[in-house]
Image (tube, rainbow over all chains, first blue to last red):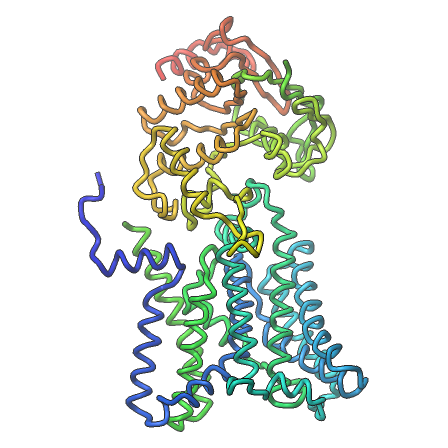
Length: 330
Length: 258
């Protein structure tokens, strides 16, 4: 009989507690600290308040996308269209503000609405047409990017009104606006995922769709809300990016889904759903941010950065699956 | 008093007819065994009661109300619970999350924001329920996937009993259990009956069915083929109704030995 004769060690207990209580893999925190220490030793510019804000600013767009990825993957789904929808949303907002000349408020709404509609279509197709999420969102990746190019006729839309530019470049109290919006979004998302019925049902759904259905959760309805939410968050990311670069760029966000999904996975989100936390994803997003920032400070070509992100994604899933297999053997 | 009444329930999946007009009634506090060969439609019939499947035709009344149009969540709120053969647990979530899934109590955060799950209340009630069942779990905060089969079943049972159900459907609750655990499940069924809770027990273990039920309904080819009063029947008759006549003495004797 295998029984609990051996007391697990201190590290193992802390690890288990952090996974169970906070849904965070402690390894990710260790990696973030190690990475930051390494960068601080390698570059004299790394450890400074302005560079820290730079990292947060660069992380804000990816971070918002990573929040979307956390909800979708936590529910057992997948959204590969995040980067493209972000690009479409930015173009839609710029089009409304510049080409139509409508008030900035409507441009902001257009960004988020464009994202939400794309997400809603994803959700409808996944739950009603029974096309796998992988294919639906891969198709949307192409559709949204193409539509962004059509709307903008392939060129970036310049000349945004100052209110929009403030969202991207304003610095109340010295803190960049995108960082403020990103942090507020993360706090709300964390509360929703960890402490509300909606969040708990999201994880239960990713854990076992049958159990969620038997418990009376309206599974398809819930999935549609999650995909719509994911699209709306991609729209918000599009707004932040567009406002920051002061242009509706139809090529914005290419490959961003790669970084966003990687951030969510290294933060401890189970690739197959059922376990996820925004707190963990934030650690993951910071790891990606520090990695990119550090490699830039060290003057490493951005091509290599792309390779690093891809490698980190595969490594993170490998470590997660290795841990899961090790735990299931106990 | 009739608690549950099914009339002429039909259900097909594409070209496959599974149920061809089933009639079934269960009184309050009654324990009904549902037996039949593999593929007779037992699980499908139960899922039309819980609302996971929608019956093609027929009527379902529960507690005097027509519930045919209600979804699984609404039927649960009326007092219909089911313990599934595969337990239907969310394995990465902890005990309380599973017990309260879909029915989490909420509170206001800082007395302001409504809709926040009251986890400490959930944990408290979950421990109380597990204790009432006389079970021991290593920790209530562990993910249920780390528990043994019997412990997981305890969680599934606790989930079914926490909200004062009127009818509990059990699909093969003893199939995967050790001898002692089987006895505690049978004791539990007797206890539910004494508290006035009706039970539908699906089982291949005819000895279990004969020992705890009031009535035994035999499902055969998608119909309720026989409705036997347990006190007036025996293993031989039940086996012969399941397989549909012939010389069943040998098969019955085998079942008798258990």
